[in-house]
Length: 191
Image 1 (cartoon, rainbow, N blue to C red):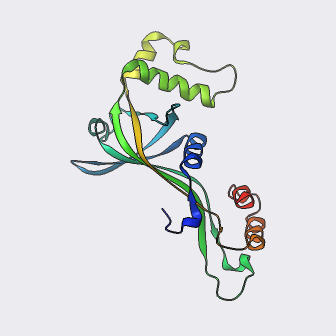
Image 2: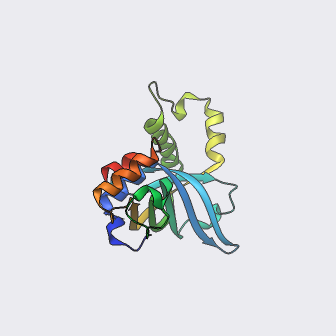
């Protein structure tokens, strides 16, 4: 994460960001070397992250009991020094939102895995919502056989919202205007 404290998210904002994004990259060390998997997550009320991966993923047999890093990336953009209009000594940068969650992983049972799939659908589906019990029971069982469910119990949240908070408000406004309709622009305006 960025070392400048002006860009740090507090833990509540980091949790809200992860809950809102719902998808990230899980990194773990394995006997075969470092591995990464892209995973959807659902956050429980206590901040635990539940996720699933393909059973065939090379990372899967190494997750239960592992300490991992889960990274959620939000919008990001190049920032030209010309956009600042603050003098000749400005340099290019990159603004972004990102959260790292460190913690221990443990396997969840089949009922909790099914609950994780239903919770994903409940979060992202429009009404009427899809649920596992709407498909043929044999197909549902085959789907659940093909994936493995886990939960990540966080020990650290490290969030960065690098949005030029170290610049005057009028400079941040110029950068947001230069970004136009880029997804990072509303974050810049709110910083």
